[in-house]
Amino acid sequence: MSGVRAWIDHHRLLSFVAIAYAFTWTIQGALAYSGMEASWTHSILIGFGGFGPPIGAAVVVWAAGGSLRTWVGQMFNWRVGARWWTLAIGLPFIILSLGVLLFVLAGGPIDLTEFESPLIYLFAMAWGTVWGGGQEDLGWRGFMLPVLQDSYSALASSVIVSVTWAVWHLPLFLNATTTHGGWPLSQQLLWMVSILAGSVLWTWMYNSTGGSVLVVAVFHAGVNAMGIFHPADPAALVPNGVPDPWLNLLAEVTGALPLVLIAVLLVAVYGGDRLATRDPPTPRDAGLPPEPNAAE
Image 1 (cartoon, rainbow, N blue to C red):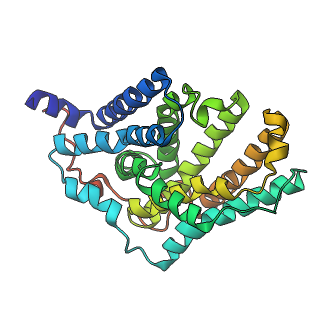
Image 2: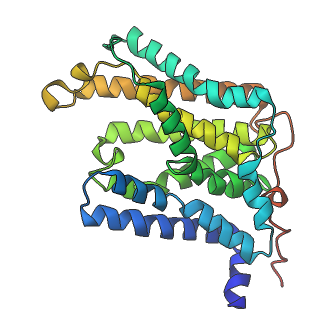
C-alpha cells in the first residue's frame, strides 16, 4: 500500500485525473448503459457521479501526507468580502441579461408572459452548489488549478483545466436522458467554448478570493441556473415538439458570447499570468506539502 501511496504522491495530477475520471465514468457510464429514464433518482445519481474530482483530490492529498482539513476548508471560506459575494451572485444575472439582449437583437423570439418562481432559482442555486456542479470545484479549482499554477500561468492553467473538465463530461453526452445527450454537434462545440471561457472566470474568482471554492461553487451554480429564466419563446424553439435548429443555435451562441467577452476582458484587465491582483493560491493552500524529490 505504501508503494501505491508513494506513486500517487509522485504523480499527483495524473493520479487526480485518473481517479476523477474512473469514479465519474463508472457511475455515469453505468447510468447511460442502464437506460434509466429521467427522474429525481436519475438526477441524484448523476450528481453523485460528479463527485469524481473531489474524491480524486482527496485521495491525492491523503497520499501526499497533506492536510485534508486545509483542502476541504476552501469550501467553507466565506469571508471574502461583500464585493466578491455580490459578483458571485449578481454576475450570472448580468451574463443572462447580455445573452437575452443579443438574442433579441438577432431576432430571437421571447415570451415575457411567464416567469419561474424565485424559489425555483434559490433551490437551483442550493442544489447546484452542493450536488449539481459546484461540488466539482473542490477538485478542479480547489486542487488541480493551484497545482497547475505552481508551474504555469493562470491562463494556461485555465485552458488545461477546461479541456480536462470538458472531456470528463463525456458520459453525459452518451446518455440520451441527459441535457447533454440531446445536443447536436454545433451545440456541443459551443458548450466547449463556454467551458473554456467559464474556466477563465472561475480562475479569476478563485485567485481573487485567495482560494474560496465556496464562492466559485456558488457562482458556478448561478451561471448554470440562469437558463431557468431565459425568456426565449419555447413554442418557437420547439414547434410541434421538434426543436428548431436555427433558433436553438442562436440561443446557444448568444448565451456563450457574454462568457467569452467577459473572459477576454478579464485577461485584458488582469493579465494572463495571475488573472487577479494578488498572487494565486499555491498547492500548500490546497493542503499539499512540497512535491517529493523525483530522485527519491
